[in-house]
Image (cartoon, rainbow, N blue to C red; front, side, top):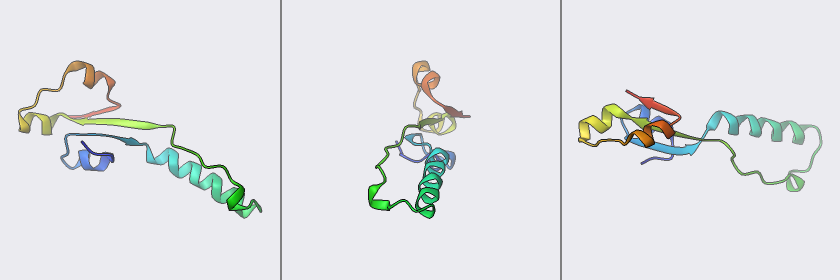
Length: 80
């Protein structure tokens, strides 16, 4: 189990973690606010709101692991 999807893309079994493109967008918003004069210390701390769950069936098969259908249905992406 990993926290970053790129590990699953290269052969890891599954991951659940932050969806990075949405985080990069939020980071760009922060940078824009600072460039417009906002004080960094006064900006609110934001927690991630988008997460992704990725399963690699090819790895599961190589390990001899059966992934239940409920998990596959909950996955945002299934790599075959």
